[in-house]
Length: 283
Ligand SMILES: NC(=O)c1ccc[n+]([C@@H]2O[C@H](COP(=O)([O-])OP(=O)(O)OC[C@H]3O[C@@H](n4cnc5c(N)ncnc54)[C@H](OP(=O)(O)O)[C@@H]3O)[C@@H](O)[C@H]2O)c1
Image (cartoon, rainbow, N blue to C red; front, side, top):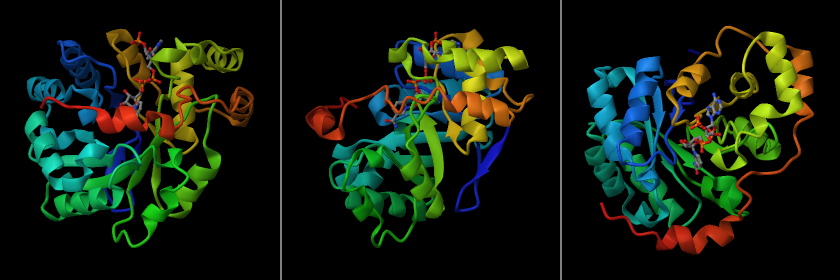
């Protein structure tokens, strides 16, 4: 495993297991258990994924000590007005006494209050690091940084071989904020198209690796942590096997040619607002 040192000095495993879309019908538990057994020590969930209870159950059942696992969740914009209470509820659902990282999931709702609540959760020992997710989707996100006292440790964003938000990523780097990619394999809706791009397959053949392994290695080598998701136990194990090869300058140049500048999740935040702010949780 490789690690990323965050601006508060904590070390986070650079490759995690993403749980978006894993249903709480036993699937999320099965996949998180498979990930922990395969050797992942970083799990990424969110209140919005509706599977935190199963993630917590899998962690308990795995027998892996809680302190050996980096556990991330995200709170929803409708929870920002009392974010510390949202953290308390997440702790209860996940069956844990602390979280390694909590993100504000979207730049919507009372973002300032959300950050204040997360800072309070840090002060009370409930959360170790706090971060921002999808903030670049709003034109107004820069106002967030005024007077925040604790700089986010990390920012999560859509990023993959065909779309890299360079200006935002550079700006975060300048602020000392680590960067993490979601949809590192192009997401389920791209139906594995990115794994099979000729630029990716050419590099994969050269190293005797799969397209998925090349895409994940590329994330880490270009300065991002990544949280690939999968419901397939072979894929889960395959995606962790990326620490025995290195992409060289020719590989990186070939992969850069696959960048079309197009998001997979191409819906502006303004168009998602009603859905996000109107979403009702039943826990
Ligand atoms: N902050 C946010 O708003 C946000 C939004 C989206 C996602 N995320 C986070 O990012 C994580 C990753 O996103 P994601 O899971 O949607 O997309 P992803 O990791 O880019 O792609 C998942 C897709 O890749 C396939 N796949 C995975 N490994 C494979 C392999 N080795 N070979 C072939 N196919 C493979 C999976 O199919 P199989 O099941 O068949 O393996 C699935 O269709 C999420 O789980 C979540 O934690 C965050």
